Amino acid sequence: MSDASLEKDATKLLVFYRQSEYVHESTGRMVETLQELGELNHWCVETSEDSAVFSDLETLMAFDVVVFAHTSGDLLLDEPQQRNLQQFLSNHKKGFMGIHSAAATMMGLSVRLNHLG
Image (cartoon, rainbow, N blue to C red; front, side, top):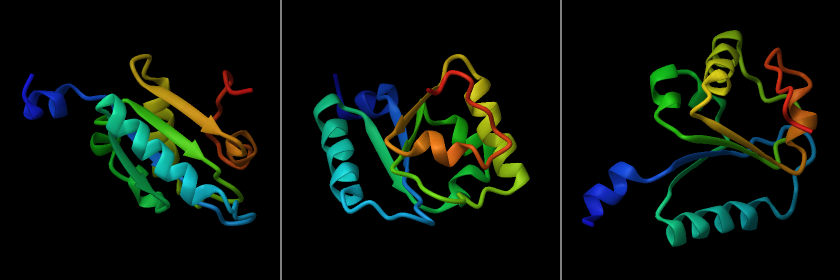
């Protein structure tokens, strides 16, 4: 299998790690670990702490999984960004993973994750 076909067929993760309150000392290492796992498993891993990653629905829908990693406090997602995230989460072919404080972060959003415990 060529590198081009690996890239095309690779699982695409968006790792979002914005922290507006408590800053976890281990966040940098956690992001590195997810990138290393991506390399080992041939995933495409994009990382960001900028909420603008949720601004364009078409770009967001290109990902297979959104990971909230050590997020804290107000994510500062405006209503259109929250709608885009909700549409992503409502798509049964897409995935969501929350690491550590993700559940508490989601409480301030209009987006609801009934399956997140």
